[in-house]
Amino acid sequence: MKKIFLLFCLVAAFMVSCTGEQNVSEPYLDLSEILSYMVTKPSAEGGLCSFSLELVPSAIKRLTEQESMVPGKIWLKKKGDRLALNWQSSFSSKFEGPYAFVFWADGHCCIMVSEQEHYNTLLDFFKGVELREMSIAEQVTKGIKVQPSTNPSINDLRNPKVVIDGHVVGASFSFESFVSSDYFLSAFICPENHSVYRVLFNGEDLHVSLVPNKPGWQSIRLVTEEGNLATVPVLEGINEIEIYSSRNDFPEIEFLRLGLTEDDAFISSQAYDEYIEKIKKGLL
Image 1 (cartoon, rainbow, N blue to C red):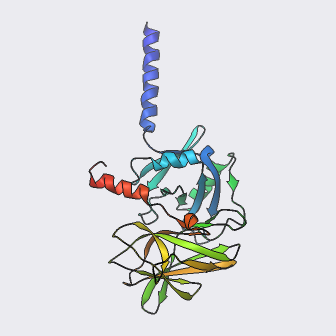
Image 2 (cartoon, rainbow, N blue to C red):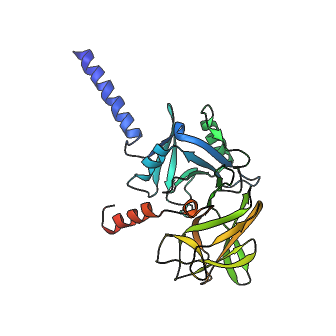
Image 3 (cartoon, helix red, strand yellow):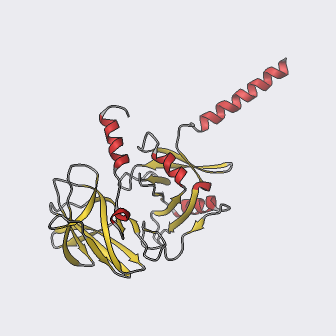
């Protein structure tokens, strides 16, 4: 009887230690759910680097359905090993190192790493897992993911540079294309003070713009002066998109998306809008 009691105590202690280590409600990502990745390596001076991840649909669905998209913790899992990442709502959030996980409602995600040693740790964590590192054709400028096809779509241009045109401050996105074609363009953006955003493509003013229709984060399509959907003439090689606010404030842009069709360039804000509605109703 005494042995049975001791065994019961050991099992109970083990269960408490397990549940204390990880709350089952916390989000997680198993390395087996990652199809491919693209690494932006740290520069010689150090600083942030990133792992852009392509996930299986079931992982995207699970993460999208997480009730809370606010900063917290997410576990990167590999068989018996786990690595704690800080869940961030966007790139614009304050970086909480050494690892930060950023997930967008459209299914794209990225792990940000603060130091070379942590970058090496994450690479070691990935070892032994059958991941496909994206091809050279896919490894374009930071944060850009190219869907390989005869005429690829170019998704999720992030991390703009600051550009100054006279006394006007703007955001610049550079990317590489492997074909020349006309592309539709959309932006996920948070406008300030009823701004309208002028768009230059490869230094040329095409008389097209991004026109918000409400305050707060939203998806906006590129339009002509007449209000019709517009395209930009993407060239094979390096291209640059510059965006300037009519109010001369730096454009707060989460990402841009280019597509050969209207649907390819479409950015859904449904998940974000539903999240805001839950906050307004006091459900979060």
